[in-house]
Length: 406
Image 1 (tube, helix red, strand yellow):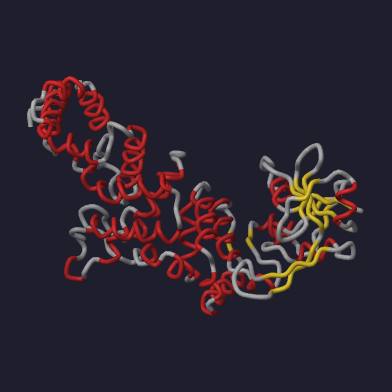
Image 2: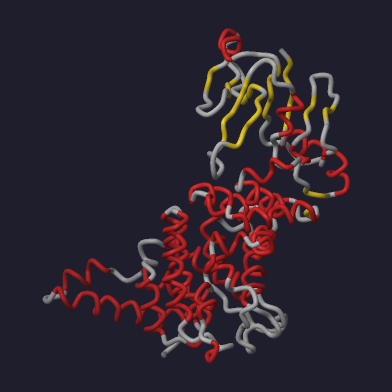
């Protein structure tokens, strides 16, 4: 029995990056032998075991054969006679198909080290086309390793997979899993751009793909289209280290602009309402977590209002706080402001323009929260009058705090 470190751990060591997790391939062993050594089985589709002390994953060397559509359409063969090279051959990219032996020597049958040195993402072999998830993975690695290019032959292969319809067999859960990981990389826009370039985005999230090439308002985004704006805003969310719900919301906030009638370009009237409907559809398809869905809906609906904050009447600001449930969900409201800040910064030619400060809304929220809602409710004879009485008191508190009488 031989044990090799494989995949991301080897790749990251060669890149001088910290290693988060280590995966191991076991050659020349059977499941019974692994159990006899105290390993605990965890794999459902193929034999994967946890080390009895370190709890790291050890997988038996295996081969795979295409037996259907999608990433689940495979049969696996794991046996003592499967070689390390055969196991590495089933992997997606050459940089992930390198193994390290106990003595430190590298086993690199597909020249992954060369591609690491050249900063190239390249598929291992023709079997790449059998798993549509690999399109998402290449795009995700492009977001992680921004300095890497995609080999032309790999990008062409991805395009052919889209044209053949293989990408249509991706299940929503897997799309969300890879999308969420890609959004949390340092250059998430690269994932979206790669998916757009190979044609997969039009099949996975067509509402997002339609934004590319759609002109923006000339007074908002000089010489820029909506797709470029969204990518700039998305990378801003990564630069600021914002959470997944914020990044996801930034990605989807302008979907409605892709449905703007040609006669209404480039001003996009009513795009917020259209965006809300499309965000609902995208989130339902992706089965996005509730915290991502709810924030994305708020950002799509209110990002234009947040931008106009300094010109708003005080009563309108308080109404916005009430409608976004800011009093009960202040942390989510802060995330709304974070996403809107990315929207404001995702612009070309705005270097000298003022960016609306979130302080206005945060100060207004603190002032409005000082109102004793319980006292107002108990002093109100007609319970139906409570909401308006509370609103009026909040407006007065905000006006006093911010010294504004509008």
